Length: 270
Image (cartoon, rainbow, N blue to C red; front, side, top):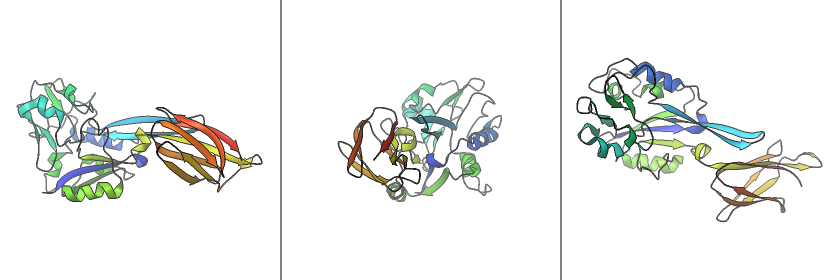
């Protein structure tokens, strides 16, 4: 059977918050029983946008990570919620409104994707706008957040798990915090922008920027190579913590330690 997946490209998100606003517009004070009770007007972020800054000095960047419920195949809230938490055949995790009333399981989600509705006495979260997906009259055929994204950072896929597994490999998709809960139905492109680090710098010749210079970064287990851009700048991204050595045109530039943060290695005359 085909299942439903969301792909989020971190590199394309610029924090416009259209997805967040669309979610609020669809659910705040709108009752979609038996799928959802109305979301409170304030306090809930079923689509939460996380922010991460990397780098130092003028070599910095900021990445944004939209985070809905990840629709895990074996969600921890199932153990906490028991009879009112279920997984549909298409992979969407749902809460039974009546059985779940008065039962706060917000602490059971390792991603912090469940919110407590005090007025309704319900645990609530994103369900991919299941009420719309099940409605043949909803012509876009995707959740509201995906429909409103202006940059294509959010895409929605409906296909067999085997086909999606091939897509994961072909497109280099990765799960957010895989060590916590495996097999989500929300996957990320360019996740390294949020979870990994970079080493950046600039090469100079005669005090002027040196473009087209081959720069090599060597670590304990890997070697990467790139060419400096028109400003003499270089950036090695997607790095794990460790010790690295930078060289350019056979000359050692410096040794760099990456420890939980990106590094501006500086400017180098070669």
